[in-house]
Image (cartoon, rainbow, N blue to C red):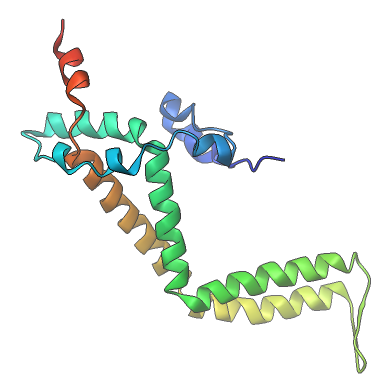
Length: 173
């Protein structure tokens, strides 16, 4: 079963611009990755002359390199989790705890010295995970991720010039 990205709720607010992104599988999303040599072509990097050119470049590059930008976001997400091991531990703890409690299928957990029902297990997981979650500072990690992705993606999109064949096709009237 292909993994569906539930971004319809987010992209529906932006109108028709993101219609192609809605309800795509991960395989489809990353199928049109541009080659790294094209994505990091330093011969096409130049300072835009005016703000109109910045807008034109950003509009073109956001659609042209969209899969590459998604890959940049994924890599920065992995980096942010690897540099915040407590947050990574909390995510693994909660995921593993929910999976383990689900595997009990409503039955009690019987240890040699005690018996715990599912509501006690969920409460125990909550009591442990919430303080650890606050201590792991997920909000600052998400804000860093948004900022780093925004600077990287919009910086690349603004300074990467369009291919020559596209520049001439726009000027033809």
